[in-house]
Length: 398
Length: 83
Image (tube, chains in turn orange, cyan):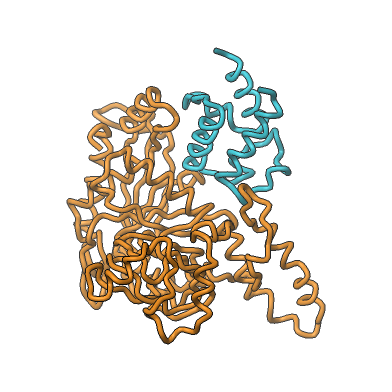
């Protein structure tokens, strides 16, 4: 069971996407796991052939539990298992002799794995977990048959009067439900951050007139399917500015800074109905603006209405958050441990701006940096913000 | 395409970005952004969803006309008639 966040204790294996004997390659989605962050697709990080599945569907196990064993693709027993067409044959597996016979029929009956997944919105899943409702018993009424919050509430409805009825014990139930698993996870991570990380905070005002003018011209000649958003430029600018301040991109682990293996930007995405996730956009420094745009639209859509992948949950090396659309001028965020920095963007608002002896009205945005003083100093943080402002003056180069 | 057909396509595009939303209970004259808590990324996905359903490319300058359900229907009806 992978750790999908520093405060995750356990996860529930909801569904397997592979069978014993099936070859897999690095990055394949092998299972769905329910965590406090919602349903996550677990990717495998090595290639080989699935040997045995050690955890049953529906089982909740602690982080670190071995979920399955994997054989090297060209191992001793591999060809034998792979020979009879592993994709189709639900081979009555010699691989797991200790498992009860009931597993085999279950595997045989199973239709192609993805079709089996219950479609439910993230909010519905969280509510179902909090109320102990089995999603498989509910018929969804949302788009494409997805189970929505209202469906779960209907299914849970008979429980509510029962819980309310015994007026004798009024103290217990309400607060626990109000504090769902995601809220508890956020509370734990943020409390740990403020307890352990000595934050320092910096801010800079950035003239956005060039960036916005470039975007407007660019979007005027792009069809809606390839149109850009300001946030794409902001993410690219952050990734490039990090080259000048690599101490801000990584993790503080065991008393030392461990540099990030790439620039994987966690994008803070608020969920309807409350809560927050910050899944990673991978290798933002190496993607083109168009690749990043497509990835970002997909990531936000999946975060709010679908399923995230384990690498997206676990890999972010820095977080970017924006409250500009909510009308906030500037924000100073709390670092998500074990990361060492967080970049915040406020709204772009027209402000008097003095330049070259003239005052004019320009769109201005305040960018902020919250950084871990154990890993970097204010001087480096200032260089980062200055680089960020500079990058945004040359949007065509992003 | 009739207004009712367009209205139903608009609802289905909204359902894709906000599956939680009570689309039947939407105030057709009030801001979609406020009612559905959608941001610019959701809105772009919505515009792409309309494009894939209706084949109409919506220029950025016309976004304000899509701010309400009624606005969407009126705008898309006029666009689907023009050549």
